[in-house]
Length: 78
Image (tube, rainbow, N blue to C red; front, top):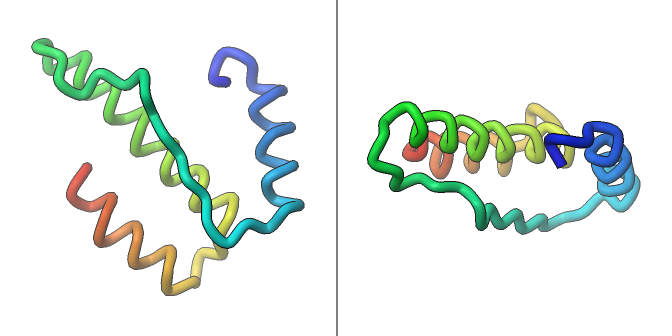
């Protein structure tokens, strides 16, 4: 979806209208174990950035659940 931002934006608008309570995102193409640090860093940057994007889209900034996910789960990944 990164290569086609119009489709990504359309999909995010659709998700917002559905107001989901639970959202599962699976990143199957990320190579977090690459031997080269630069490649690993870029892969993790896109992965964690994606998590922050969907949290911002689907949850209000002041929600306790969002704060818990950001501090508990994403903190270790960063």
